[in-house]
Image (cartoon, rainbow, N blue to C red; front, side, top):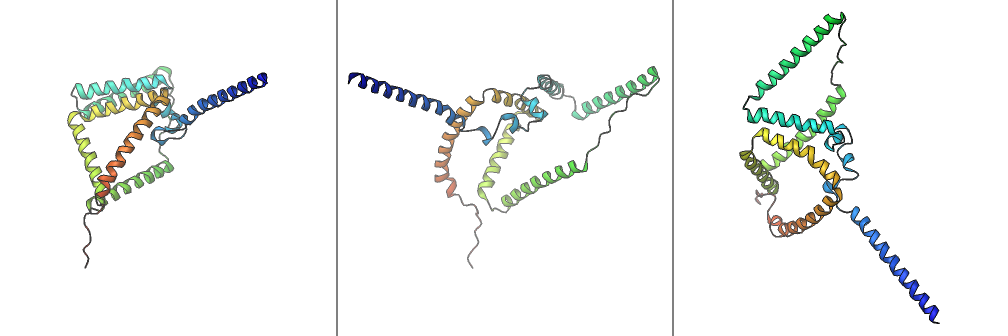
Length: 239
């Protein structure tokens, strides 16, 4: 009898240990399928298009990525710190490139008594232009529809959001110039995706906690403030 009781206790302990181990292994799996930044599906490389641009932004082509930072830094120093006009610098650079290419082609032809290999012709296909125009047309129409709703007073919430964003951009622009903002944007675009891809699990976990907290606070504000703001301030009078 004692031996049977001991065996039952051993079986119970093994069952509890197995349940505990299964619960601990299922917890990371549940967390892995939880909050994803920007509501993305798949890997970061797939979310960014999966092409050469994604390789550069994720530092899979380290030389190109480092070259982008160097070129952006040099351009920022030239235009921002030196005070040289943007149009003059661009014209001088293009002039120098054209002169160098011209003398290179003629020197090679004179030295080897043969023509230099012709450069490939550059042309934009009609399909590419049509696709770009269609995408641009959809975005422009959406912006015009938003502007129409704001100007005629149909959506007061949208008007308040646009005013807040424009005021924020104006405040930021008062402290930084256009070239400095472009330089900061370039550095962020070339570093943030790579850092996020490396620490993806930690960033998603902390961002999920922050998103949950913000959602709770926004729900309270929406119920007490935003929901009481009428969408259309100009109500039609009853005749």
